[in-house]
Length: 114
Length: 112
Image 1: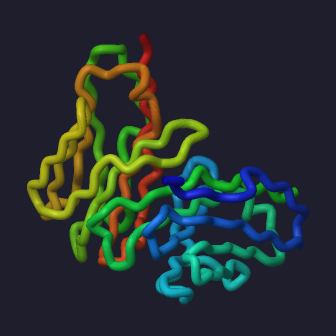
Image 2: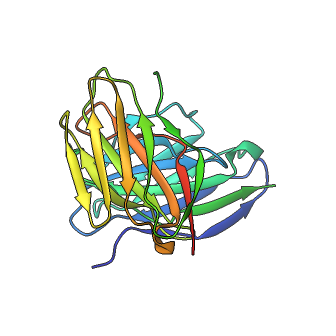
């Protein structure tokens, strides 16, 4: 059983460009959450998708958007990239409304904006 | 406490020694506390999810306690081994959907 997978592993973009990151959840999981980890900080919650809709959102601008597909996989899109968007982006999968159980994380996508 | 805080930021432990570190979180609107171990170049791995005041959980040489009234959790590593070297993250959630608020982590380095 494959765990959570993310692609690509690394990405280098130029300021102002747009980027799309992808996540496939653990088999059987229906909820995907995205987190941003900047250097020296803990992961920050971006948003969560369930049943193809954004369920919750953290304190991130509208430049950050997402999508969930019928097979529960998800994309994170960032428009008009800023240097400050350079970070590790983590995807986590879980079962909806089951915060008493662990979330499963992917290895992350390292985004560098130059 | 308004955010999740972990201390110390890092610690160095001799192989065989035991150690512990702290996670502090807001005591209001508590739903669950998660502990994760994160080794370099790997995915964060869930250790424990704790929900009840007074909870104690154990996994091998690692254990954790929870005090929701005062807003803290301790993680203990008994007889540290080099493979315990990792960053240990705690995360707090106020609802059943599991929007996790993470601390910055405690980096543990175990030297032989």
